[in-house]
Length: 102
Image 1 (cartoon, rainbow, N blue to C red):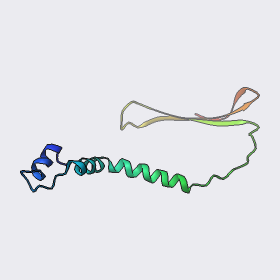
Image 2: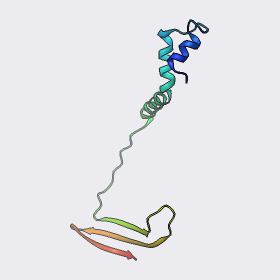
Image 3: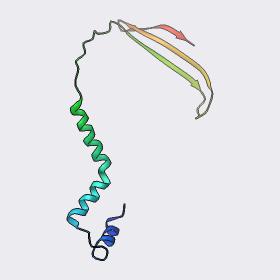
Image 4: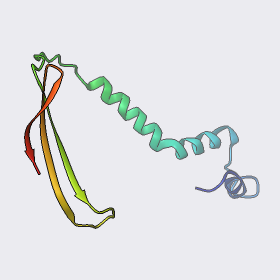
């Protein structure tokens, strides 16, 4: 996109004479920001189309989670040295391992 001075020189009094400051500044601003403006407009349209669906679920009686660890030397393309995995289960504020892979 040309700068405002270049556009005025090309389309102003010395150029083809179509430069109108009341219109051209606004159009240039829209052209610079149209991707952001259109993305915001699209997001607002999609928010209006979404439907909220209530889902009922029971609380979990116990918490279970896993940890996956990959050991390798630092660097982008280094081979994997070892893999470890643990599955933990929480019972009354105590954590105990359920399964272990080393």
